[in-house]
Length: 106
Image 1 (cartoon, helix red, strand yellow):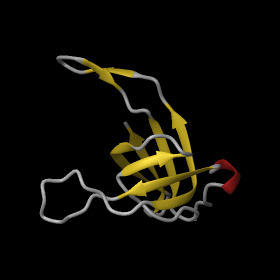
Image 2 (spheres, helix red, strand yellow):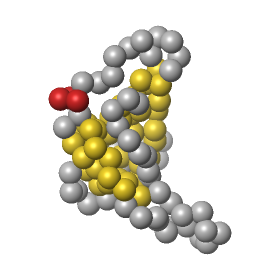
Image 3 (cartoon, helix red, strand yellow):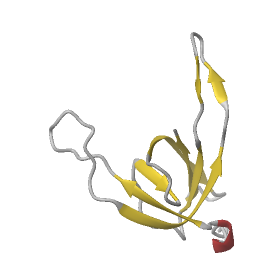
């Protein structure tokens, strides 16, 4: 088994809000929840698509499968303004189990 990410490498806390599935038109989120023991690495890239330049993700949030509790799609890291989670990639260990997730925030 691959060991979890050490807690000293997960220094941040974030809050998350999940979208409500209330039959409306979207844009409404539930109550804020706290996720401790995450890591955020900022990114200042600009991406070129076929027809435009656009801002890249604001950074990547690392969520350990063992140490971190919770999930959500509207994320605020260490008190920053909330941003949307654009993509979430599960990273597997050698046994096919999720070791951690990498969430692109933008």
